[in-house]
Image (tube, rainbow over all chains, first blue to last red; front, side, top):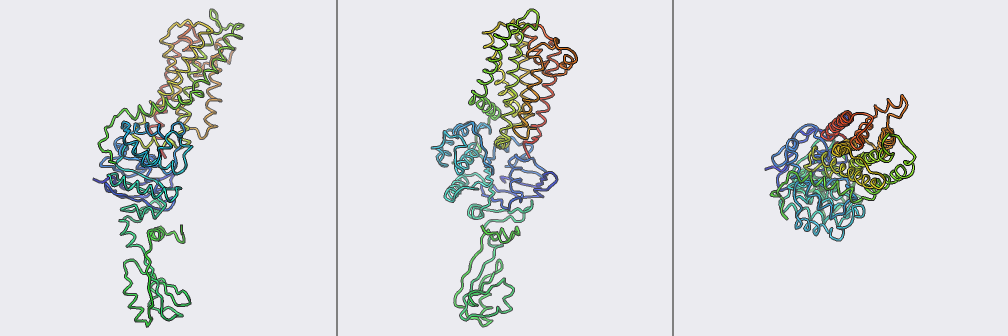
Length: 306
Length: 262
């Protein structure tokens, strides 16, 4: 069974389209990444799935149930970590966690609650209200809250925004562990490294539309370029005409030639072309671009380097 | 660490949890939510029951304290039910905590019922304590205690709905306080808490019959002392009608997710 089926999803805000005909399916048990620049429609899509934003048009089916007609059933199956930090200062971490399962119609399970507290390092902070928690602790608390009723699909909207590298890696490991034990994950993130190392499949949104959806490695392989750095035995002044098909550059006074290989093309062909042109190669190095380049290429954002 | 497909679901637990949370919410800050209104009402009781009240006589056959106490009780009920739903829901909207609730299976009727019952509990608690303190100043005749309870419950229900509506429409804390300071407060004060409408000269006396709160206050006092400016049935009918209208208004807003869901 699919964990989530999104069909022809549309949403306008005051006549301005935010999501324009999005379709995708999330398989049960996978980690699915939804990427896109700010304003791409990711959070609107996620919030329609979670129920925070009213459905514009289309259909959302979670584990075989319509999320409008059977909302009380489908919401029980979802756990949501919101992008914005939600502050409630009336209750301590411990009190809030004890209460939260009840909203989902599930009795508090002290063993499960303690496990989440331990795994997310919340034990020393149980008697603090949220305002007293650091940014990273707030995130961990929100993740614990989202998991307290044991959802089958965990939605993480920018879960590691603003947290330090060490904690980010800790959270990745935790999410993977949750996933290994059967929880499907839907993740939006700004950190492309996060998507690349975490997600089985990635969808990229831009201007409210889905512009790519593939297995992560396949997406990177198919759409990314490789750069070939060639050290020449003798410097050259001008690049031979047959290499103009590759976006090229000459560096180090003509001793180094940089060539961008199109997706799917190996270096062998270029090397024989170099030999045919009478150029002697001293050394070569190839560099594979990552998801970042794919993302920038697909969304048309140039010159952005984080 | 196993995903919880087989967690047993209790359909009423979301409602009971929200109700519990709403009750705990005012209970935890009881100095502000219970003690402050009780102290305020006690001061009124002292002023009008023990000092000024000795020199006032507005209704034949009753001391001023006997006249004013029902008004002070219902004022406590009104102010505190309104304060509870309006501040709780508005704070949730303002601080963003509402999203934690919107993603849960809590249905709109459960949502309204939980907020309403918790607010009613706070209002009626304040009213009960004010009545208890008032026994040190005067003995009420309790003409129809059940009808008095009915009117108090109706008042608390009505203002719980009004608080929900105000919380949804308010843009900021200023707008929210305008509802209490510029709408409820004058309507309560001019609605016959401190004097019978019948002693006002026209046109003020006639205008007072347009004040919806007059019917709540008069009906409650009527049930306690046995006389009023209007009949109990009219007071109950008008108040009941307003309560039902506000309930449908609040239910429509919350059912639609107006200003709650984008």
